[in-house]
Image 1 (cartoon, rainbow, N blue to C red):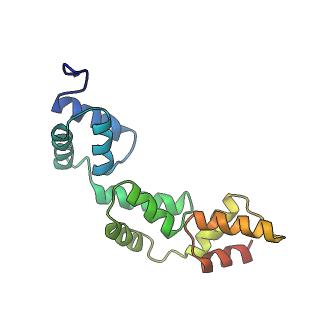
Image 2: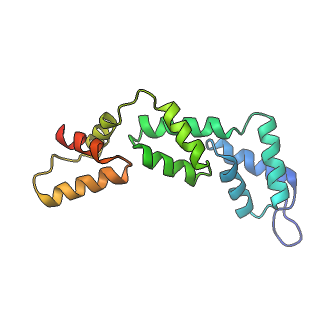
Length: 156
């Protein structure tokens, strides 16, 4: 409900807005807080809404981060550094992001993931220096290391 200055003013409104946001997909606490603040809710009301959602089990940063890791590996075929950047951009502390990545990708061969990424992006076996640079740059942006990139390009 808007207050006198036209900005949202109630804790209930912040909670409703947070629930609507979560209905579109998982969010971290910091991501959800930022969204509520942008919509004009006070820090206090945003904090109350987030605390309530945590109590109800509707907001769980660890669960959200772990699901995100699995999604980025299995569907997007991203490498560890790109996944880490994605998680930290969503407000996951870097140390937690590294731990979640290590735990959720135990047994994953990122060389094969890099190859899947290259195939999904229709990267062809480089024939000249220019196409090699482009392929390497694309795989590097996707978060792969040099050995993983080398493997993917050799096996195209």
